[in-house]
Length: 108
Image (cartoon, rainbow, N blue to C red):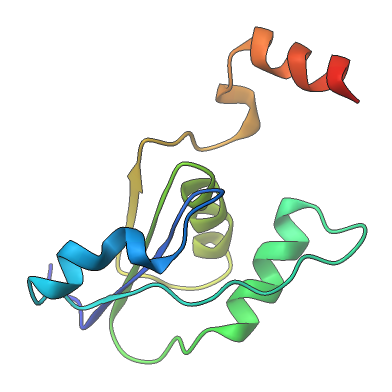
């Protein structure tokens, strides 16, 4: 399955430089800058705004690493990528171990 472009999202605390070696090797990777989250955004509404900021013409795949993979899942549901590539991520918050979710709740 050939694609013209691979649009990838890095995880939290990273940016497009994460994919520098792959880009230097000649892979058609794009890591667009993300839009600034707005107050009240949840992942699906944020993903819709990210999708609106992308050029989704031609043949493309969408992917992501870590939190970028979760974003990629949401964006892929809103458009028609040839495929979805997930690296070191989970497909939903339900896949995160319970003790991590408890730690997030306690830290609020």
